[in-house]
Length: 227
Length: 412
Image (cartoon, rainbow over all chains, first blue to last red; front, top):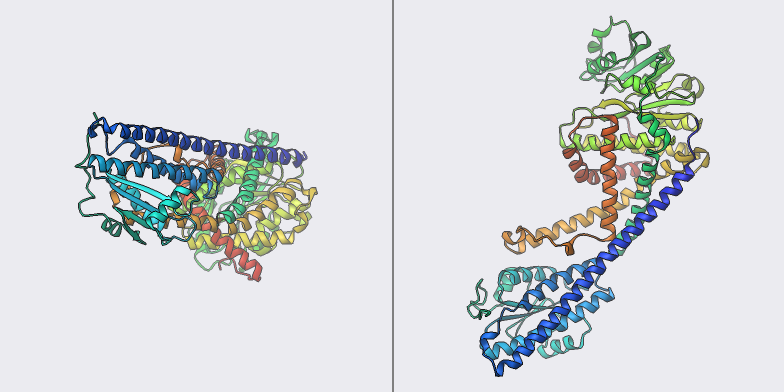
């Protein structure tokens, strides 16, 4: 009994392996597209929410501040968006055009939310803690990974913190303006808390020190409950 | 760095998957299916089982006993124990068999395993000769299962289904999974005549192949590979009996394992070089075109790929440790919410998962077709966790030895 020719099995194996590779590529791509769609949906939602808060703010002259909540859903949505965007960036790479586009949109939403919340805080005498965090993922900021992780922890532990993180190198006009207005140097990581700039810290103890005393607590005394 | 990793990983994954798919196709080949259905033999040719031993005082009695317990006509079965100049009490241990009618004990000066096997072949008068390492034990129906597979005059040898004897330690369990994987691979590749090793634990040869091709050679301390390649070169077929269970002692220490595998791998690379005419030669079909090239590729690719994987795993581990130390432990170890968004679905992760699933399936199939009873869970866990860490060590050492021309003794 002679062994069967190898050729048929070899060819079939090649076709099947090619099909597995193709399927893997398609599944991976499809899931990444789903991720991007979800991020776009969240950004769209945030855009609508921002518009809603803006409109609410414009109505403030006629309405009481009790209708404005310092801890809007917007803050939570921005956090969700941040973690999803971060993961997508690790999956697709920071040079991916779609990732850059999503990050640009995210940065704009953050700036918009930051400015709006500042105005609301002044008008309604609220005292949220604003943190502007500037990082770089070009390999020139070894401490940014730790700083980002610590900030994520702080953001999840202290809901009153409004953390806005920005890729320092992102080519977005509004972001460049924010950097020049606040005079942020390219010494990363950089933090702006209540207008004060701090550079180069990345451990929990040092980052906690940049917050004004008493600002880090697990409850928010100034929160106005939603009606 | 990412680009370099991808550059190496994609071709590696493609070839690894290709090899696994080819294995599956071979598994469903008509010949493989036929051999999984046992067809009991009605004729029982004479068989001599040669047991070469050197300082095997601890296992030799159990090994001989297991051969004596084989379910095979006693007048057709003889045992030839060749004491290769043992310096321990192997001689005394064998004394108890001196009056057993179908056992012949040969004492000779130490000359290496191949000389002990040859001494046994020379005194054998049987139609078939088998070898059984002195640290291995056969199941009672192993010989009948092997002999059923000599159903063609051009089948020169039939190998058995090896597994680890009484695996208990982590290392033994890891090797158990590897041996079960080997059962499936050997069975599938035998169907397309792709075997390049006839292992010491219970391979039975048609005796006339030694008359035609000559006796065992030193063969870089891997005489079982050399004889298989010699058989293949002469266009003899090597079959496999997946139901013929044989249990072998596995190294108990990492150092012992690395030493054993370094001998196997250097032996393979040197024998492959000696028989390079088989490589990429269409006359040797599966063996020449697929099995041997892939076996060589797997040695070199593991040297390149696995250190990269180690590097990434270590990088992730250190990042995890660093992040753990940066924030309170309660935050690091809080239960994360399950979210599809964060599922690892990169191309590498998906294909890697595919390759691992195939491997796990082969391990299960190996146990199933050989009816080997074992604890899968621990074996598979340790195999997945440790094999990739240890294997590159012996691969690197072996390739270094071959490149530098370093020759080591059997136990070095």
